[in-house]
Length: 199
Image 1 (tube, helix red, strand yellow):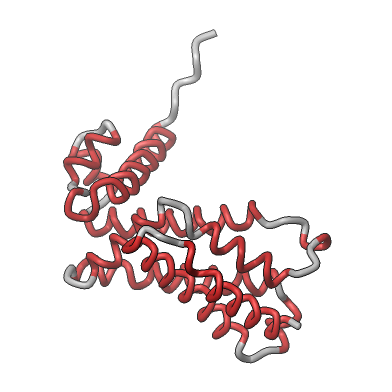
Image 2: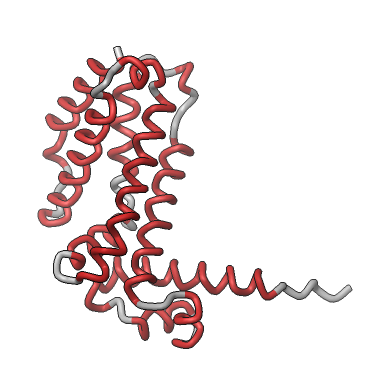
């Protein structure tokens, strides 16, 4: 029996996925300057025409890549969570796992994009709603993990923001220095903050 032919929608979905994956790879390996549409097409094995059929501009492609990256990082965090009922110190587990997720090399792609957005108006405009949705997704996940604290503490979302942005900043600092070994005191402080918030 001959293999089933893929539908136009399936082929389109596959091409889009290859373009997004190629963009993330290029950002990590080549930086923003080296992530040209030509380079992305080469990596994805598609034509420039195919790229612009899916994305109206390079800015749209980069923003879509960032959104997919953030969604994948949150999925990775969810998948890494242990059975919550068996965890004695949930605050420590939550912070430790978040730190581990931020060690994902793909995060370099997001950092490259936000650095480029400082001087690229189109990219900045396209990334703004992506960042807003990502922040809300992180807060929603935190509310799921700590529902009692989320319901009782009016500052719960602010604490989540402090924790996430602190780890993001540490990640950026470690990229510059190549050393992540000096952040234990910061992580201990963040863990203590989360403990006090959820206790």
